Length: 357
Image 1: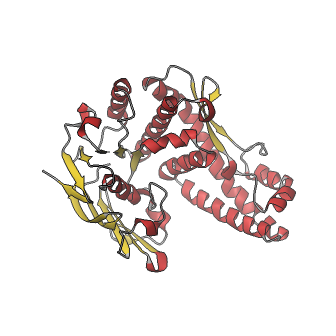
Image 2: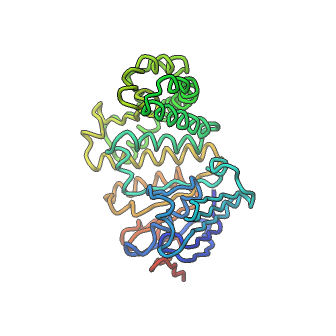
Image 3: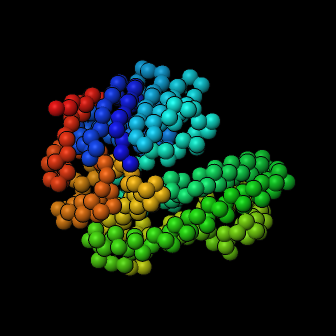
């Protein structure tokens, strides 16, 4: 996919920006706090309509303003506006308003690489589930609808449990189980299909050991059919009632990453965790490319500075293979950008404004 034009209004520290993006991409140099990461965040917002960094929408509005607007032209035109008053968000695709935000998700595709990706490996299960959900929402038809249905039923069941309404909670067992089964099966299929490639990517990036990727469901489930999930809900109902929450289901599952049989979260070094995180992002890019028929836009937020020269070269070789399309690379200094990427146009970001030669 290629993003040809980008329009930003009052987003973070960017007051107004209208740019045409070169086909091969661009390198943006800027000191910390000048807005270069905000540029990447604005681009990625057009993919999922939420912050790349987990911020609330109202926090994305430029200080002193009441709304923000972002539009991108690619294979189609995607635009999103948000107003603090009423917390209203409007998404249009090719100038047609989407009745539901989910209808616009993934109309433009991008993959974002950042130093914080290491937390996918080093952090808790929530980040790894979020990773799986993003990959599958953008590459698996029907996944986002099933995920939304599961979350809605989960919220309703948990609310009933918290309020001591056991019979009302049981009414949500069937809809939760049906959607949860779809979610869990899709996750399990993707992980099984990706495990060998994950090993290949880690090896190419310089990891000598055996790198494993395994879907780890909560231990109460026998399998991912709706019937078995409902049975698990019945078995754990007394405990759920005491805790006021649903303790079985895909919302409790994990993606287990190991190196030579040892959990990367606990035993992996910082370098090993970074390698695994980069491999996960490359897997994400390949999944999106297979689904769309073209590679997503690659967004690189100062990811090369943490890698030694050998790992930089290996990563660049993989990028050329996996992400041969458009790239937006941001870094505080040119010296932190690999030489191979400095052939792209170079812009400078200062105070939310881009200086272009």
